[in-house]
Amino acid sequence: MNPNVFIADHPLIQHKITYIRDRSTGAKEFRELIQEITQLLVYEATRDLPLYEAAVETPVAVTQCKILAGRKLAFVPILRAGLGMVDGGLALIPSARVGHIGLFRDPQTLKPVEYYCKLPNDISERDVFVLDPMLATGGSAIEAIGQIKQRRPRSVSFICIIAAPEGMQALTAAYPDLKIFAAALDERLNDHGYIVPGLGDAGDRLFGTK
Ligand code: PRP
Ligand code: URA
Image 1 (tube, protein in one colour):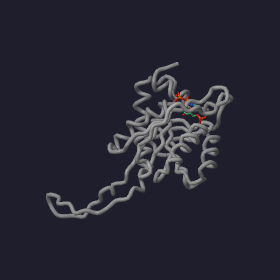
Image 2 (cartoon, protein in one colour):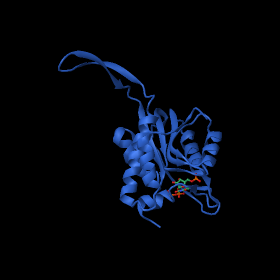
Image 3 (cartoon, helix red, strand yellow):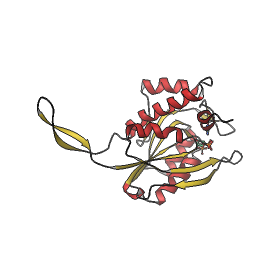
Image 4 (cartoon, helix red, strand yellow):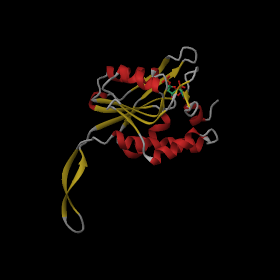
C-alpha cells in the first residue's frame, strides 16, 4: 500500500459510513454525517502540524504546553458535493481560509468540466486540503489538484469519504507524493462511473436534488 494513502479503520467512521450508504438516510442526517466523518478525517490529516512550546500557569503549577505553530491552512471543496465537508473542517480549524473549485463530471465522457475557481490570494503560504466526498474515476480530483498546484501552495492533501480503486490508482499515479485520506475504499466503479457499493450521487443526497 502507498504510504501516502490513509484509509480510516476507526469504528466511529465505519459506523457513520454505514448510515451514509443507506438509501433511506435523509438529507439532514446525511449532511450531519458527512460533516462528522470529515472532522474525523481532518483530525488525521492534520496529525503532523508543527507545535511550539509555551509556559502556561495552571491553578496548580507552571508547565510547558504545546501550541500550534501558526501554519496557514486552507480547505478547497470541489463543488458541489465538497461543500458538504467544509463545516466539518472549519469546526476543527476555524482560522482556515476556504477556496472553491467548481467542476462537474460530464455524464457521457465522465471527464471533469470546470466552471469556477476562486482560491485564497496567499495560497503559496498555505497547506491546502482539497475536499470531495467521492473519488470515482479520479478525473475531478486530478483536475482540481492540478489547478491548485499551478499556484504553488506549501502542500496539498486530498480528503474524501469514499474512494474507488480506479480513482485511487489514477490519483496516486498523477501525484505520487500527494497525501490522500479516505474513510472507505470500495470495490469498483459501475458502467456509469458510480462507486459500488458507494452511496449514490453525493451532491444530490446532500442538497436534495434529483
Ligand atoms: C461528483 C463528486 C466528484 C466527482 C467524482 O461530482 O462529488 O466531484 O463526481 O467523480 P470522478 O472521480 O469520476 O471525477 P459531480 O460531477 O456529480 O458534481 P456535483 O458535486 O456538482 O453533483
Ligand atoms: N459521483 C458521485 O456522487 N457518486 C459516485 O458514485 C461517483 C461520482
